[in-house]
Amino acid sequence: MPNTISVTDSRREVSRALRRFDAMRESALAPAETATFLHQLTQGRKTPSLLT
Image (cartoon, rainbow, N blue to C red; front, side):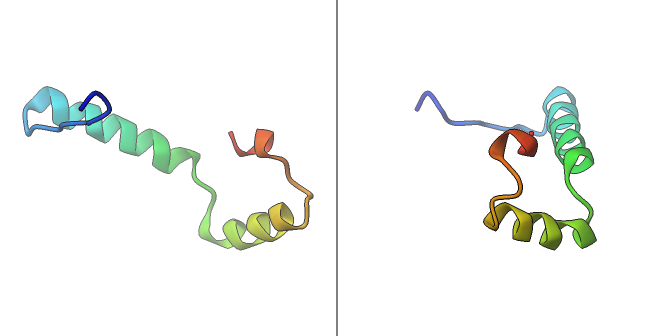
């Protein structure tokens, strides 16, 4: 399958997965901000371009 991601427990693969997870976590909104953001999104006050 061409779109399958396989992660082994080699040091290189673990480091790569940790970097990707850390980047995702750092870009996430704080829990208190998430509900407000989602409400604004459903009301049309936020656009998908602001999600990135």
